[in-house]
Length: 60
Image (cartoon, rainbow, N blue to C red; front, top):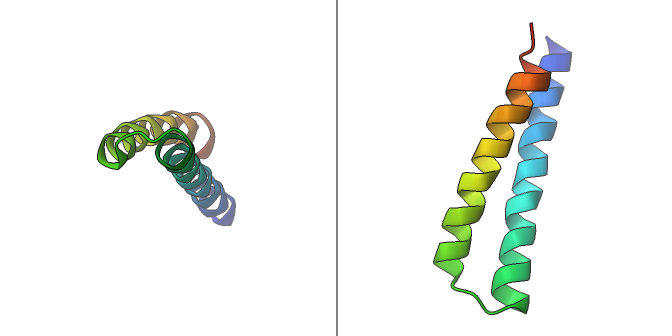
């Protein structure tokens, strides 16, 4: 039970870091529209989180 919780938490943290890094790179360094970058990075992070959680956290 604890292992599953830790795995789920770590996957969430990794995707949060991914979203934050995308915003920093594309908005701050490259000057892209913040709203567009946030929407796209959140969609990608959600897909990554779903796949990784399905494959690792909630495997049977």
